[in-house]
Image (tube, rainbow, N blue to C red; front, side, top):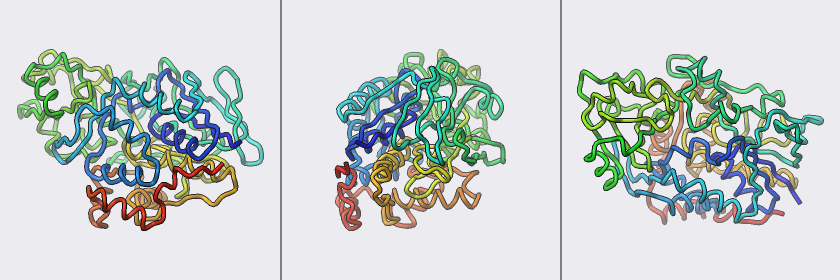
Length: 427
């Protein structure tokens, strides 16, 4: 039996665990906190713009279980907001138990409160990872999906301090890079001004702390656009610090844009509370995550692994990566698809099979290859890429990869001979 160990239980780790289990492996998922999904616990946006195409390609490839579970837990579908169309907003309160049940149904062993602090190496190969209690968890192949944010010192050094976000480093300990522990030299992302990292792109407000009209609009439509009085506008400079550059639009500087994910998702990396409360309808506003959302947010993209297009990490024989570890591909959809490919290829590697490299005729394959090229030539370290906007969505449209036509997406995947490839039992 092939044993795949996935480190990190966010969206990328979830995708990897499901894909490896579908391929027939025994899967152990190690998560340092007491809940899965990481930033997915406060995220909530799916299927906006090119993410629709990527999600449907993934479903056709046979890696759709996670996306379909998200769809079942949607609060709103087909939501439009500035710069974005046909978004699905999932319920951040319901999604984690639902995903945990999905993993259990695939036979995945889930171990929460299991922070990995070190690795055991033999001849360029990882043979086990070491937990904080000194237990060694052994496996045949490993997938790193630890993300790129934290620990607290990085948010203080490169941002505005620990904002006490959903990653909860003070409680559960900060992120540890498995690749770095194994001696891999990783890339560091940069903001547009050249400084390291990028700030998480949104905050969450307690819906009940907002004006009744705003709450009713969110409940009814899923989105609210509230003009900011000119004297209270922060300007567009803060938007350049965001990881999510697809939201760095003028409309987001001139308006408070909220999305209903259970919380009221405020599409800004932070907003001074004293200014926010001067805007009509926000007089009693309170931050839910991060608690210091009036000052800052988590700093991300500080540890990106060099990898190939099968998502194997350079310099290590049996380590694959997904999510933010695989490069500046921003978002839940992007994490799930890279995690899924890493999980499937982990099993292929353990069996001595050729890796699966998705062709560039698919949006997923093109994105994975393009971002890899951009990072390696240095240009990509100061940019962020996503199916939902900015640099990569423009590329999607130019290459005619963006579509919401389900039959066209199915035909595209089928023409590559890859329909259902992730559903094939390899073991």
